[in-house]
Image: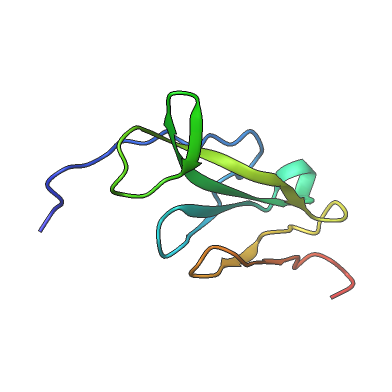
Length: 111
């Protein structure tokens, strides 16, 4: 049965090539990992975002029961490959709790 109410949240817009090549969502739906393996001429990168609730000037981690404006906030800096051709993030995974990420570098000659 479809939900009785849908909430539209802020769109996540990437600024690099192949942004959203891969997307992995935590079990709670509050963290998302987004890959862009061809970013920066094939260096590749991963960005992690967290859904937050903004009420007035306060910002805190969102929960489905909260009221307010939901938006996605990037956590930290992008995780980048080492050199052109690494294709970092061509393979990636986010743990179910959203606390651990794994990033593959299939073009890296060092393994």
